[in-house]
Length: 473
Image (cartoon, rainbow, N blue to C red):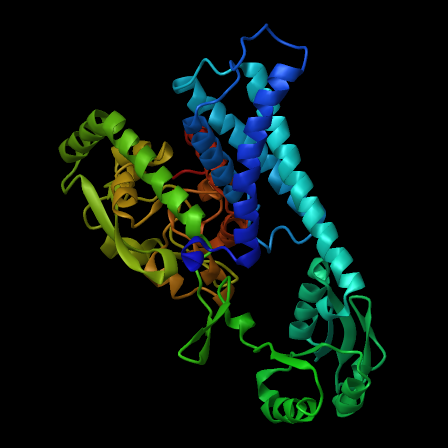
């Protein structure tokens, strides 16, 4: 279950703590409503909340906190990161609960609801601040809790590992410095810490007793050197960890795991998983179903107009590349002549940089009604069916053509780490003014900053981009 929800040990501790604190905050709101001299007079016991409100409050707050990344250790390393994410999650949870109460328990006092929100947020923030102070105090007072780390290798991988150590100072990690054989790095500082000496001195440094862990961050080509370092360290009471030099191959996220005693490194791990994955899918199903019901008649009329205006079917199916490189058949209203695919090579234009532009203004293959449908993106409406069956999401990078993906640079393939979408960050920031396969920077912004609330923002901005018709052809 832990793996399914994507929470680490700290995440589960924080989640369990928040469940209790949310209940305590709402109980305190009853006490505050009776004790403070504000609001209308109340009868004894009139502030008691039914148990179902506690359940709804817990679900709303936990969902919102999770969506804002309040349980993701990578996003709350620093106190200000945690403060902002918890605060935004608390505000969002309160708004979500307010909407639910409006439809169910409207008799709840607005003043008491305000007290509950303030009390709950204050309790959660105080608990997390206390946890940080506790670990910091323990790390100083009990040497056994400290992790003094020496990093072997001051290259890109070593510096990346050093940032991890520095970001985890909350848990008692301390960076001692680096060892590296490169003479050009001797006595240099990286991230404020020096390269102490070459690797040959590692046994002497470990014998001094000022280390708890050694992280070996050498390139894969240095296998024999890694083996020698491990042999030397085995003579001393230090923990040894190796950071494999494979992370540069990862598309977006790499994850290590052990199966039957064999360490495995996943280089293509999903960006959206756990609670976030469930929430995104539920959101897609709900909204896509509503939109299909509302647009059923207009879509039928569009299909009829296409059939009457030109030869060929109303719907066009095209192979596209989805999440994790999986191929699927994407649906669109046909906007071109029936033989448009065969004429594609005649339309393609290659730029001076060798980039292929396959979508041009004034494309002779586009029909008259097709030009109108494209201008206002009405040709994309059948993809709501792709969303329902799970091939696509409402929001995400646009699915790309396989022959264009074959021309991608490795870094561009990172856009497939999330479900491909009907609309996305690129669509609301320029659309076809920038060819889709050259929009990877916009797509990666979405990949690295994903949240359900970003999806909502993009969906709200999409109608404006569509109505303006900017860059659509």
